[in-house]
Image 1 (cartoon, rainbow, N blue to C red):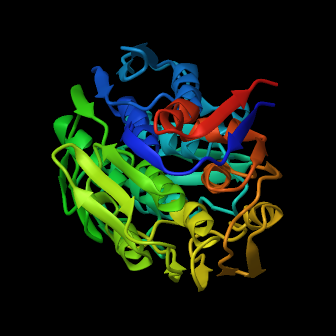
Image 2: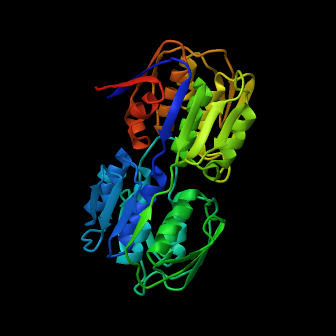
Image 3: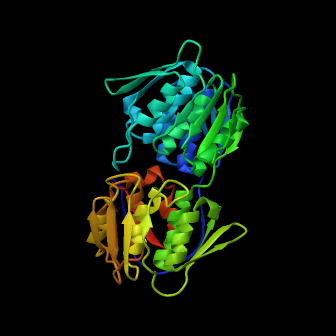
Amino acid sequence: MDSIIVRGNGPLSGQIPIAGAKNACLTLMPATLLSEDPLTLTNAPRLSDIKTMTELLGSLGAEVSSLQDGKVLAMSSHDLDNHVADYDIVRKMRASNLVLGPMLARLGQAVVSLPGGCAIGARPMDLHIHGLEALGAEIELKDGYLHAKAPSGGLKGAEITLAFASVGATENILMAATLAKGTTVLHNAAREPEIVDLAKCLRAMGAQIEGDGTSRIEIQGVDRLHGATHEVVTDRIELGTYMLAPAICGGEVECLGGRIELVGSFCEKLDEAGISIEETARGLKVSRKNGRVKAVDVTTEPFPGFPTDLQAQMMALMCTAEGTSVLEEKIFENRFMHAPELTRMGANIEVHGGTATVHGVERLKGAPVMATDLRASVSLILAAMAAEGETIVNRVYHLDRGYERVEEKLGALGAHIERVKA
């Protein structure tokens, strides 16, 4: 397995381009299954997860072409010849379950393996199943696969209330409801920018959707959707991650394509910690205000709260902050696996259940560490860039699922970082 070697070397400077959102693109790609016409996505990120979704769609009979060095995805589902999403592909990535709603709506049936992905806690399909059953689907779990069938007349609109504002369940139900007969009203819907981006794309395809970005989404079903071209929204998690680079290392970095509304609660915490954020014509300019960063408390919440996908990176910042911070994880259990690795670098962290207490230290020291999941991987790299000496981050295959060309981007800012092939 590849490793990444990082040598701490002081302040960063320059510009860093922020890619299209991984989580948005992985949701938009299955939308091609809803129509016989072509769907083209621009500003697509170049990640291993995108390749996995391409493989999954191809196994169903869809055609996916990667153009312009991977930044454009041209897709067509005019001749779907399979409705089974196989375990060997689905196990690689949680977002694979998002083919369930579209296939059920258009084909009337779907067989989808229970999904895999990072080991950061159980993320059950219960809410997806409940919502699709409310639309009239019959769903049965057999041998690790969800077997779903629509009624003979197709899916029908319904009032659905989610017990939790699940992003994935909102996306699956939203896509299925676009082709359901009648009106669907989804209460306690997720409000993330990725949901808004999906709704924007579906509207471009002819869907009738209102209320995206709020907790109540109303969908009026249509008979068919047509093709469209859609630009993938900026990745708010990559944006937040790279905003933390100058916060941890010092210096000044402009994140191209960044917008404060994508990371509002995160920006509030950075300001509280003593980080300057300035809006520019091209993005967001970030620098440390004066001296040592101040400790702040963080609680992860659904959007517009603090993102769980930035918790690990924020912990890296708090490791050398002045004072004690408390990070509470309310979205996923088992999401502090990076804490012992940061401790190997000299951090002072105590974990009790869903809460981590971080006592800031003057300086971290390089050490061999192991990445446990996608966001943990990049948190260790951020910490290593400000540590004394050399850090070797092992098992970085997770990293390529969510960050494109991370060594190239950080290296352009002055970081001493290189990948060592296995």
